[in-house]
Length: 337
Image (cartoon, rainbow, N blue to C red):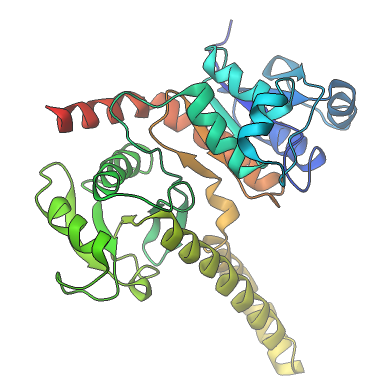
């Protein structure tokens, strides 16, 4: 019997569920023979969606769940009351060791709460952060934290830097990744109280490659591989990135349609331009892993289409094969000793 990386996917979570979620799952198993997807949700609806596609049925399993956690529901209450929801069922598949990873485009709050309450934190990890990959001139960088901990302490940011370094080195293949802390200037004495207190801790941390402060304008150039901040700042950076990127793409396309000459030019540059713009499409990087848990939790955008779901599932393969959780445990244990 084939040895798969098992991924639990909340098929009912997100704005485009279940159609885009199921489509993404099928695209993932058709692209890789290493993964098996467990789709949690209303069985009849999921099977109807699956009937449209051709795939290896050994790589897809449907797990019935009668309830759905809506985005607006209070996360803690939803987790407690809706035990038979697609989101909770998927988390328990990881908790019980059936699956290696969880992917959802559903409620961020319920995923964050459920990840910690149901799956649990790695011993020694104070606060698990959400860490999406964002495109840069040199490839991509890890933004950590982008939404889980808005009131982080300096010790949390130090752990974020360590976990982010493990991820970039092991999953993305970046040797000795450069770590920067988001600040309003390059000088060491600048910043708010959190940044000023965290800076010397990162500077004196022997097992990361700390390069100092990084201003927001330097992020797209790829100055740092791991971008450390608390979740409020990280979420603003991420949303601005998405908004500016989408606006620029629209403006470039509109500009190319302004005259006959520009339309001819657009045809000539279309292949090269398409590849360039694709590199700055956040969907290509999958979802944001929640690092520091006893299993992998990946949160994708609520508006995710199939390509982001597919890439989120596929990133779980590398994470599992590289044994990221064990490496994080070793980093945190080293810190305690």
